[in-house]
Image (tube, rainbow, N blue to C red; front, side, top):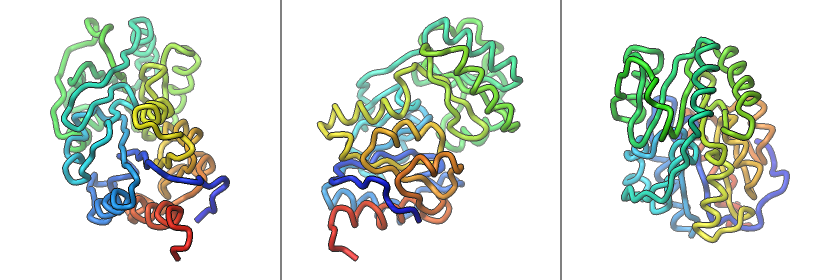
Length: 280
């Protein structure tokens, strides 16, 4: 494990990614992870989650983790309370949506689109759709095309199992969209396109303001390139063992993989000892 480069003086909140971090590869929330969040609560540390999933795709985590903090769906495209009260959403501009769809299709990626609480696809049998249904626990709406979906779009996803092509598409999107949208890979096979303010760095800032917690008192944990933006702003950042090297190098600590209780181990090794310096 890596030592902290600049350890936080105090930790008041842990902000966690979900897929690849809080849950296992099979999307299981383990008993040790549930216990770790309980330990945080008992120590007075708040816990919050953020994901590229829609907020309703994190419904199954609310009760086991006794969540009370805002939930950031779509990497910060929407913020809701655990009772689903909407705090705000950030949509993409019509121009950004049109450019995004053109580029994603040019690179041969499949397209998914999210608007409101709905998820739209062109083919139900397309790659990763079944997996996503299992993950978020609701079905997509199948449409023949996206010609009528240029407004009120919260997120567009490009999907492919050709990882190099996804990375190339990400770079092309970033160059073409500039400041009009945020384009980052949440998984090697997904590139997520959201409002420029809908990113995990923005999630940390929103929670900092909403909960009146200084960013230096926030710890973050994640596994994807899109988690690096929240790493940069946090007092402590923890990369999962299953993260790529670039993500690990951006964090102050590295834990085990999500299939080796990496989340629970991070809480036990890095966060709880920081709260009680004399703890072995």
